Image (cartoon, rainbow, N blue to C red):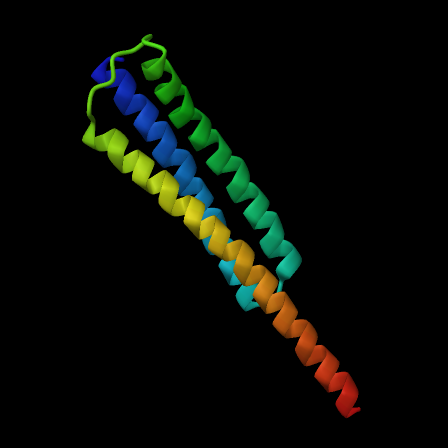
Length: 116
């Protein structure tokens, strides 16, 4: 793989992971406003973007392991992979936060119903 191809692949990973991160940030804003269904939709969008980024990464790795491309170290590609994995973690955390806050909100509603 030429350094130009490596850079293009790295930028595709960074671009899609960045879009996924943006959707996660938007989902957090929705959680803050108790808009859980909206937050879930944003997480779905984030998942779609991260899948694209992951496919680019996987394709590069497969080509290298099959001997089709010579793997050379690239700081940019390493950064792209780091970004990809970090955003995966962010998506996971946002999903958990939705579950936690939905559960918390349901408990509050139940308590309010008991008081009435």
